[in-house]
Amino acid sequence: MEKKLRIQFFDDEGRLVEDRMVAQDSEMYSGPKFNHEGLFRIEFTMNCKDDIEKAKTYLDQLTGILPLGSKQGRKKSIRILQDPQQREELLNEVIGIAMDQDQLIQLLRDRGFRFMMYDFLETFEFPGLEIKERHKEKYQWMLLCTRTAKNPKADKYDPMLVFGIQLLPEHDERIVVYLNGQFKKAYKVPIPEKPKEVFKKTTMVKFPHYMTEEERERFRFELRRYEIDPDTNLSKFFIRWKPYVENLPELSQNKTE
Image (tube, rainbow, N blue to C red):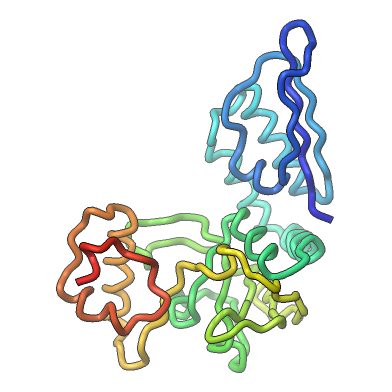
């Protein structure tokens, strides 16, 4: 069952002025858009302890106790994943909700998970994460990103709950999950008949096998720099390698030559 959040606001005389139903996970992740001081009614759907923490943060932001877009609220959900029980609860939650892989990917993205190819995952040398040899190159991997840096190699990830989903070169309904560093289970999650943009588009890039790790690292850095500032001039190095790197995000016309 997809969790829904109903939000109702009233004026000073108790008259209903806004009534909307939204996807709970997305709304609580992004947070309220403004503070509200008057009468309101909110209907949450609680499925685990994580939902309770997010609801508390949402109410604190709505009433002004926490600032809008407060990073403090998001850190709570990240810290919860340090508890093995909470990791398993999150796993059971997203697997239980997702009707197909499109929904699963969106649920994980709403919680801060990002895709990466195995060659990039391997550069982090996560202690305690033991991915089976047969899974390494077959799947693309979603990990919780806890810090984004200007240089991708300085990003921080939590490797204790990892989802392997095969999007490239073709989709597979079988996904694998690693929990607390060890293989947990394989699940069959249906592929949607008409995948949405969230399913088709990722930030992963696939390098040719003959590209060295130093070249890949430099390419990732320049790509991140461009994503932060699209007006940045790309180097001759980037332009030379661009035709050979698969699944690149679209670049503006003046960056493609």
